[in-house]
Length: 403
Image 1 (cartoon, rainbow, N blue to C red):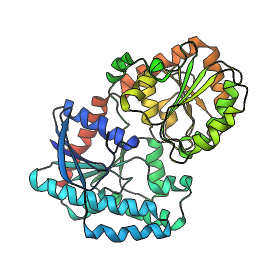
Image 2: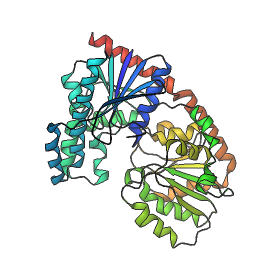
Image 3: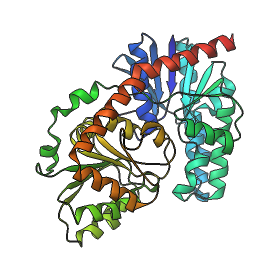
Image 4: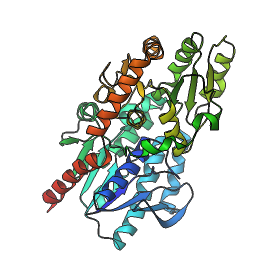
């Protein structure tokens, strides 16, 4: 099949989060299965349709300078930044894909809901489409402090794209249930988890991460990797890190973009005043290869998110055979069975994370056991081609129903 994946997020140029990571893994997996895969992604600057090839995937990038998009800037006056983003993205994806569809005959098109990539494509073009549910705006925007008007309008735009799709898939049972209940979606939602290329985590240890970033060799390393934002639980990490570092000579490493200045203005100044036995290292946003090396070479990986679906940060740590401490919220319990292939802490309670970390610090045998079990779990249920085959089955069903 010739498959188009539409996603503003796609590394490295626009690889901002989990949607881009999913699209990257999924595109490569579909190629491994023998499909012709094209990705239409965003661009950071205005650009005509430009194309490259990576790992057998044809990647197109496009960003329009159309006059139709200029009025959307007025939404900034009402602090409706998310709504503006969805409108601009919907038009960019539509203009770019319409041009691509004149060159290539696509059998099926998949896109995320978050970004409203399907708003115009699903309504105005005839292709069978699958909308992949990741993190609908209506479910997460309050965590970012957005106003009611922005939440309503942004959610409306995303929902139009969802309702116009041929089929829907979700990365977790949790998210499928939330979408049915809170977005009032009655269409069937196929639950297909996220997939990951395990081989990448067998080879990424070649970079000596500790030496490159000056992490002490003699200290157990605890890693947080992700955006420094409230939804990811970064606000809990100050007290978690303080409690651990005041009692244990470990290295607590943070890697990710500090969009809201939390690390600079609150976290680091607070820890600087404490009598720490261990050390804290904030590395900022890293290249993908450095992140994978960090994950492969850490001892414990922590995910204190207060809202999650099926996070790639967790899957990557499990693929690397690391001991994971995650939140008992959302889709995390679908990945981690407490005490078997990781530990779950109570969502929003920093003391619960401290207790779990202390167990793993003091019990190396437990770290090894849950890390090995995590790797086996991912190998059995989350390999990239295994998940891609489930998606292809849904694609074929869509084609049958459309014809």
